[in-house]
Length: 422
Image 1 (cartoon, rainbow, N blue to C red):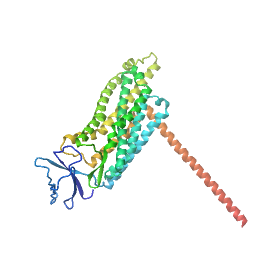
Image 2: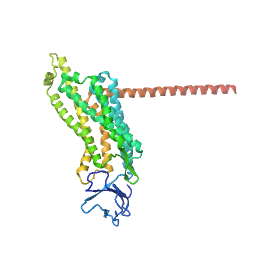
Image 3: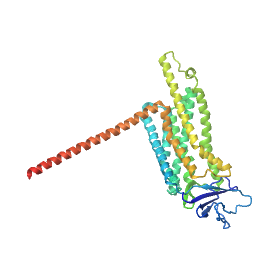
Image 4: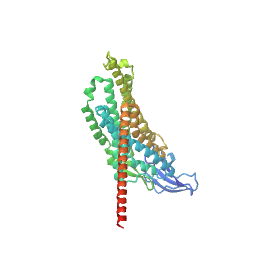
């Protein structure tokens, strides 16, 4: 990262607020401050003591202010090995995520039995949201790898982030609706036809996206480019008024799309697990599925096993989601109550970017692990694609071979005619 280091200066008078009060660039070779920016701007009395490597900026923060100075790696070009490693990692995640989520959608839509399940309709909606996150996350990934801030302009800052936020909100709501649908189907099986009919589930899916759009409106209305260091801008939401409004917005977002969904799903899946992982005999009695024939008992056992597999799959998906987005929540609350901002670094945000995209890419993998139906249909679909590609390649090869032979015969015939004439 060259011979310059970027530092953030945060004071006790503005704990946890972003951006920091002062950002300055320190040249480690000349042991001098190259440039600095302040938010809000300071008066002209700000001076820098740059006579030694261990000297700190002498800023007029007042006699009772505690100043913490932390390294900041934003805006400094990443090394080539780092870019190559991240490019390979993100390329793998994006390819797996796009192909996997497309497979989920295609498999469900082309299989009549799977298409009839209301649970699978919700899984299609979740896969669509994850697919959008993977596609529109590519610009974010590219700019994070280069570590040069947002370079696509203000309009793209608003639109791209808005689409990502809407897809993320839709993904969270879909997980909650999936949980509620499974809860009704397993704990209250007699009410499932009334409460979870196909029409009602489709109506809920159609409501998820408008609700997500409404919740994401602040992003498209108030997102803007904010200078972090000289020449480097970040795409952030800037609400009217002071930064307390920003913090209130982030708290509301955290409660609505992280804490509340987490609590709801932990409670409901605990009740589902308690009911579903009881003995087979008890489950047969509760679901009124007992029969005197061995064939019916085998069917009952298979049904229970399938339901357990689906619940394991959904619980794993929920756990993965909340693990993936926990660092951003930790960053939010730590930045509010702590005096230092050690999490504000390029490395931390690269880590966050990796695990959030892994979340969207890993769901199809979880479906293949826990669901026999998905696993079988994934294999069938991939084999069909491979066979189609081989057939197309074989057909093209035969066509090229035939064309080559015809050309050769024509050339040979022309040659003979020419010789006879001579």
